Amino acid sequence: MKLIEELALLFAGTIAGIFTGLAPGIHANTIALVALSFPENRTTGFAIFVVSMAITHSFLDAIPSILFGAPSSDMAESILPGHKMLLKGKAMEAIGHTIFGGVATGTLVIILMPFMYSLITNYSQYFSTAIPAIILFVAIGMIFSEKNRKETIATMVLSGILGIAVLSSAMQNPILPLVTGFFAVPSLLEAMAHKDSIPEQEKKLKARARTGAAALGALISAFVSLVPAIGPSQAAFIAKKLKGKLSPREYLTIIGGVNTGNLIASIVALFTIEKTRTGMAVALKQIVQTDLHTFLILIAASAASLGIAAIAAQKISEASIDAMQKISYPKASAAILAFLFLLTLWFSGILGVVAMLSASCIAIAGIKTGIRRSNFMAFLIVPTLLVYFGINLA
Image: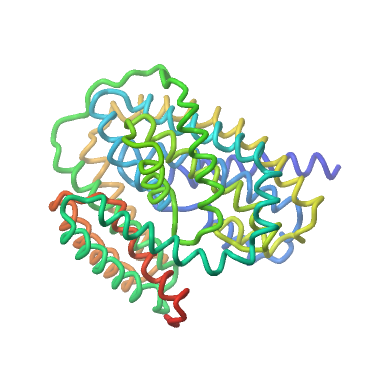
């Protein structure tokens, strides 16, 4: 009976992840943490539900991100290359690359798990010293990779100041208005400005395997799972430096891969050094004991979720593209923008709306100067660095 119950919760998590992934602005982490308010849910079965939901969400949130530019923080960097392919009639291929990246990277992370376990266990004492240096190195590298460095620094400083102000406030769900303002609002406004409908889209999945990009994504996922404030956006930057110039397809493969691989790698980090680098890991820490038996169950649930979520993402993306071509793209973008505004007001209050609008102004100004959108992640990088340098933001 217990096995049947856990399988049922695995499929229930998949269904929940589909809804959270397709709903702009709603993250699976938010749902998981809200569900923790019910004490009767503190079981291994519920942990399986959380893992399945988070992994499924990591596949499905590519769909609103690429089709409408309404991302979660994890998929924010996929907007630009995804939109370029959308405008060429290749949205299905763009989504296909994120799906392949998720499956391949997730699988490779599971295969590399013994190596990761050994590495984390033997060298965890050095992490607290190395982490701030790594974050600072990545931030400096992001600046020097830009042509307009003065504008980049100004944008990162403003983003960092806003991040400090919002994250140190008593605002509920402070990440939501910041991610919405920095990434979703500018993209949706751009979409609303285009009066023409999007071109006819190819309906068959033609994404070619990018195994090299997936392998690179797996290695970076293991790294990202140990370093706070370094997400898929910064992971793509690291990949560029390691591999050189990335094509849009390789870029999407890495973004999709790191988005999913980071979740699985964070389970390893939780069960070895008890560090929580994702919202999913925060929820799991409060649900289950960090013993080997539970660890193996959750890894098995992760592996099963990879296959189920990939199939669901492909089928739903095909239906979504068909539906999108029958509606007004500007009107749909306006409706999503209104939904995100109401969502921010509901979860973060009027101060959240102010934060969202402030982030939007900074983002729009930065985009007009031609800098990369990943630089807006300074809203999280700067406060994290200050914490590691011993500066209390509370």
